[in-house]
Image (cartoon, rainbow, N blue to C red; front, side, top):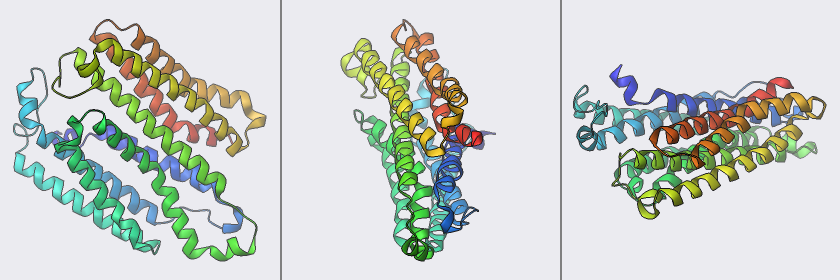
Length: 317
């Protein structure tokens, strides 16, 4: 059980869902019929396991690096150094990273583009620097984590494009077909997921500051106070909600759901709008740590809703 907690299964579930939704509900839908691809390429599963392994390695190393500081905080569940030997955690980090990179090499070779394999060791290196350095630098760690999560949503379309370039170029040359809508929706999806992760990190930093945890971290609240951090984070949530509406409209056009507009709108309101509005109102009215916790949880639900929105609308097709 301790090893499972160490790799943060809920975060890995989020990453897995992100990749699966991007592949099945955007890439597969956006492929023209002329390409003749009705099934998912085998390389996707290698990409999926590569990302999950590297992510698990990053989470394990993050706890390894913070073990001493976590042990000093009251009420904090400490795994590394108490339930699991520190050396074992470091060995697990190295093993998962190498295995993840190996899966990435296999996936890259299957689409005949070995340049793509560089993505996986670079991501592993960035996660290492995030834990040791960037996380404590003002806003930099938040941007880095958000960028990495958003980039995960681009991996399916990136590998698909290189696969099509290698294996289906004749179909594109002989027919007037385009994958531009798929590329645009994928880019919007990745950007929205990344920006949502940034908002979530700002909320987490604010919540931790209010309850007196990780106060040494250089955050908005640490620099400018709780009120300013609330206003900035609330503004970011409002922008995120606006972008989610734009993304919803683009999905309706992508799936051609004009004849099911009410059903689509209900999905968008329930999955995204309601949780984000609750998060925004709870944040602006927050007076203590419990209020900030409600805002954080509601925002997390809304961001999971955004993640699942393409799949929900795809089901309506």
